[in-house]
Length: 229
Image (cartoon, rainbow, N blue to C red; front, side, top):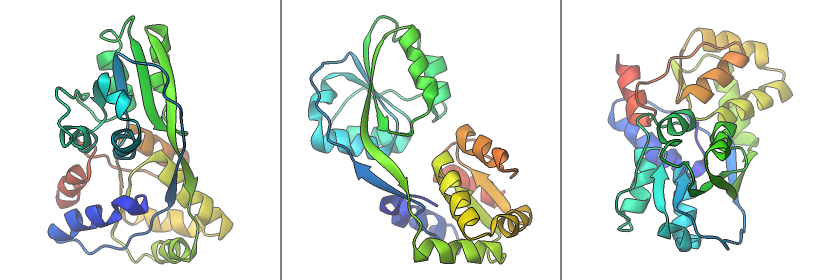
């Protein structure tokens, strides 16, 4: 489950590795207009979506050094000729905070992300001057396609399911509650391999009582490795 913009890319990765896919976008993205009036020493970009928006709409942010969560996020900038893009060793906000907070001490830092970003990055305010710049909003998407997907999961049509973010988990279970399918879905998930991309996603699933495995690398290439193991 991913936002619609990235489903085709993900489907290709999984199908090329021999998996049969059913999918539905449980989140939709709404871009937000912002005024960039400051300059920054470092710009933290937390997703491919944030990276694309920066490149397309706010190139003035490229004057700062870029710290990107994830290879694909970094590749958006590298494709535009931006050099020396840095990434944390694990592709999540907690690792970024742990590995970069000393380096960012005393700097002007922008965090470019959605309205539902991990609050751990705001702890950087203890070390540096931080502006959180919300460039898009995440909203649940609950249409016919999502209802059909949920029913198929509840009926046990899948052997494995991949959750790509904590907001995806919340949207999935929010719709399950609306359809009175929570118990059916949870029972079905117990019989399949549940994969969570990243610690926040895994923690969110645990909050709903669902155990999940997590790939070593928080990417769909990492998901392929764990599904093949």
